[in-house]
Amino acid sequence: MFLNQKRIFIVEDDMRNRIVYKMILQNTHKAILEFDRWGADGMAHLEKFAPVDLIVLDLMFLMGGISGYEVFDQIKAREEFAHVPIVAVSAAEPSSAMAKTQQKGFNGFIAKPVEDELFAEQLADLIAGKEVWYAGERFAGAQR
Image 1 (cartoon, rainbow, N blue to C red):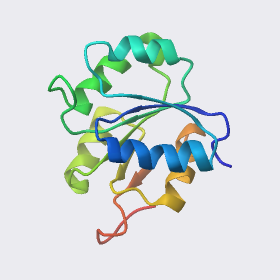
Image 2: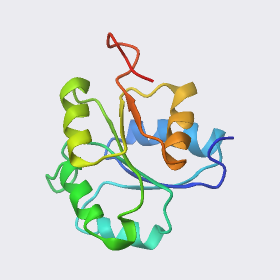
Image 3: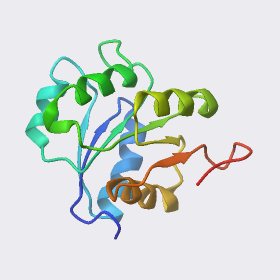
């Protein structure tokens, strides 16, 4: 159980993805999860859930019409979250999204759909201070 009692805040607006994350991370690996669609009260929700071991961000436009990149900026601007690793988990085209997330300062990128057996291990690596840049099996030259 790589993630037993680790606190993971997930910004994701798609209910299907939330269910997948809950099944893999909470039910199987006993992580403590909190979800937000990042509306007007997103930062307050994150503050209430703190302390946080990892933040997972979808990059696509979220509730309120902002992107995961903008949410990243809002979170990193707060001193209490500056040290928390943030990973983008997205269906965005990996080659361009990876480059942009690396430049922005993300700790990793994981392509959707996530791979059940690998996802918890990837998140555990991020919590342990490693970076994870993974384009998924469907892309040639995928990284692990």
